[in-house]
Amino acid sequence: MTHILVVGAGAWGCALALHASSAGHNVALWAHTAPRASLPEQVTVIHDMARSAADLLLLAVPVQHMRGIIAHLPAAPVVACSKGFEATTLRLPLEMLAEMRPDLPAAVLSGPNFAHEIAAQRPAAAVVASHDAELRENVAHCLSTHRFRLYSGADPVGVQVGGAAKNVIAIAAGAVIGAGLGENARAALVTRGLVELGRLAQALGGQSATMAGLSGLGDLLLTCTSSASRNYDLGFRLGQGETLADILASRSSVTEGVATAPALVARGAGVDLPICRAVAGLLAGQTSLHQAMSDLLARPRGNE
Image (cartoon, rainbow, N blue to C red; front, side, top):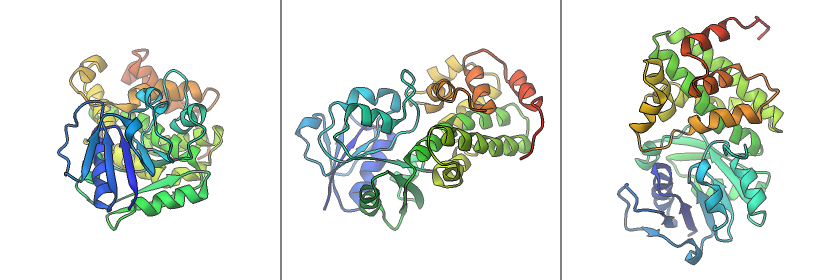
């Protein structure tokens, strides 16, 4: 039995704690405040990480709050389970870990996973990626079950880029449908968005081919087609004419793509990212949805 500490008691952290417990591990869940989810007695809720003896850490706090937590992590291999670019430094989760805690072996877990479905033990798959082959294999073996299939990946940069950028494309996909522009437009946008993910991954040292996997295409399919996606829903409501401020005020959960979009565009300076840039401009109030779509359609034609 492995002692697992899940850091972060939001929907995703609670889902991971439930999953790890059902996989037969001894699980503790670090929570800043009391979790909203109902947890089995096998999951111990703690408020002091320093006293936790863990064999594996699952870091599930939102990326924008991750820096304040990393310094306090106990000494154990860590799996970054959150998606995005840090707004202030433009870093990915594993880059923050390498900067602040180079003593901790690190991997990333990403894929097309809604927290409520993982918590309900519905079938799903994801990828665990790290440059450390032994670590990624051990984590995949530790957390895989007959309901949650984990693959091992050697491209942590590409996996992180896919997980972060798909939230931005999902906002665009939701806006297209919310504005009544049609399914054809969404399909075209998502397909070209996948190309942007590949360009960005390659520019940052990853592999464009990773975008054909679970953390790229898989996550895009999920978040760009389901109203259960917070990012898609935000885009949908923007497309219907609501303001960003009103949408954010109506929800308590984090919509990762809002902070990720400008950070991604800044980190990808020099990379051809027209859809991501259009989303960043829309969120910043620098362009309207109509103008953004007109600009995208007016781009010079090229070869696919």
